[in-house]
Image (cartoon, rainbow, N blue to C red; front, side, top):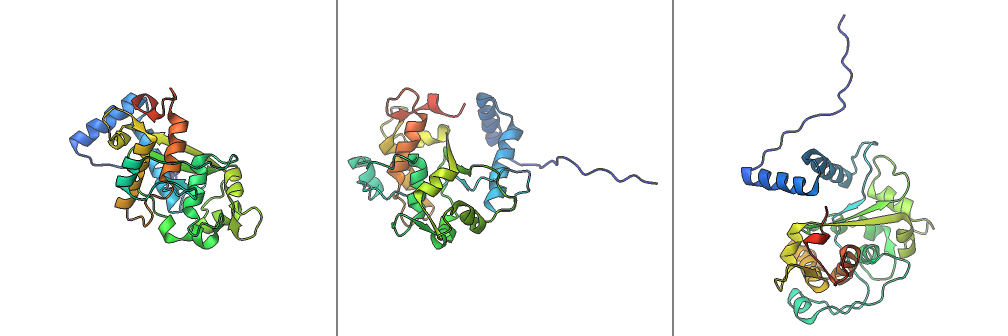
Length: 246
């Protein structure tokens, strides 16, 4: 009598890369003291979560590498203007991480200081621009239901059940994490080896424009401000290699 084999705990996936890409990837993993498998599994988890098909064992991150918006009045209209004129950052809500507030403002398409279900579920808000070298992730606090759809996620975050999501509701239920890596140095416009707020905002704007975002500059300055504040270890107003993920 043949005994049925227990289900496998892991499976193997073959990934084909060019020799140069493999060498660069392995060198990057070694520098950060992370295994190649762990890095790839992390990307797979995020990709699965985006399609709302993650198994229960995977912690679903509702947003990864998000594009952002800003309701504050910023001197930010076009990429060239961003670089030349700099940025006038308005005061953000004291209760919110500026990165979370930037996400809120990006989703609030009609700028009425509330996110409707329609705005949250808009197809335009489900695709993320690729900020090469910058990853932005929001994760809800507490247990995350398995196979949670964006519609159910909205209902879970809408604590007052009024069909609208306020900044306070979003801020109270999510945590934010940003990760910087070497490719973000493409944003360094003056060649000093560091990325300042204005340079990062211009970079985000450009990447979003490339992805077809109809409002590529929205929230870029606020997000840049939040990212620099979170990662600028020596408080010189810019980030460099010493501030990247280790």
